[in-house]
Image (cartoon, rainbow over all chains, first blue to last red; front, top):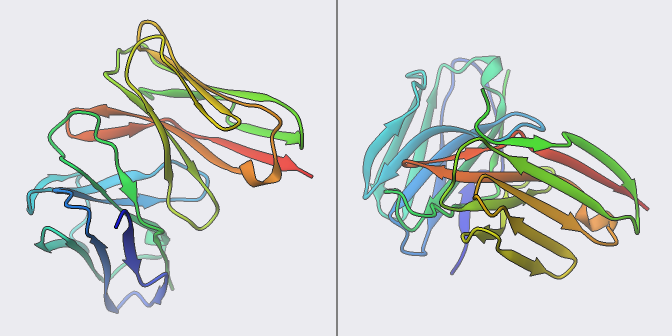
Length: 115
Length: 109
């Protein structure tokens, strides 16, 4: 299995809602990432989990809360978002987050719209 | 300041034409990766170049890594509408992957 899956594909939420994005990989990768991407721009790193521990938080607002229940799963909990948080949220995984080539495999993304 | 500079930023060509996309840096990279992203999808890894001067071919796509490992190029021969997408170069920096700004390619039938 060489795939990263993400659910849901699309999500529309109000500013007072609480929702979660889910990501799963079964490639035995030990590093997992959350990115935010605006149209026609490169992905912006939000969080990195390495061996199920949060290793990088790129000063992301607390309304975004990541969770890594096990080595195959990554969640992003959303609460009290703002309209400017509307974007494509991408999950990625790599064999190891500790350097090397850091070849990352991306999921299809969740298109989030905040009303 | 962008660590990886990509050019051109936008490219619109006719089917059958050739094109080259550049990815340049003033820093040395241990490797560089190229991704293609179609609208509404995640980036797909096309290739990783590791050795200075390396050339890799993937059907009509040719990737080069500069001798000094500071730059890379992607050449597409006889472009097709299916090549349309956002092309991103990326390189590992500590525990992160740094991306260029991307080249938005449109191939018109």
